[in-house]
Amino acid sequence: MGKITTLEDYLAANEFLRETANFHFRLEKNYADLKPLEMPPRELQEDLLRQKKSVKKLCADLNLNETLARKIFWATVDKLIPVELKHW
Image: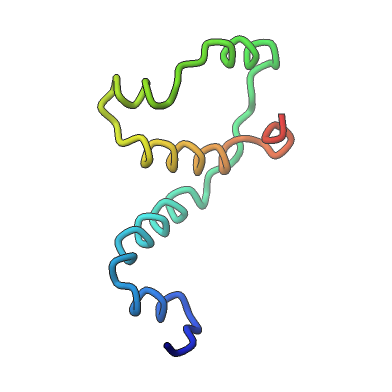
């Protein structure tokens, strides 16, 4: 097997991954201009976190693809949540 030097070479050699790669590229492009949100007071954040519902149950209740929902959620968190709150 030869050395792959670019992502395009890799996708050409592994065409079955192209659709997934294109999804990720479009997601990143759509999120490129997003700015972090102003977050509500910490007390409200703590109240919201106490009202947990499992992602598996939420996705089942809403008939959502769990893997896709998780990917979109974490991509959104990465773009919208201010850096200092990501560690909280």
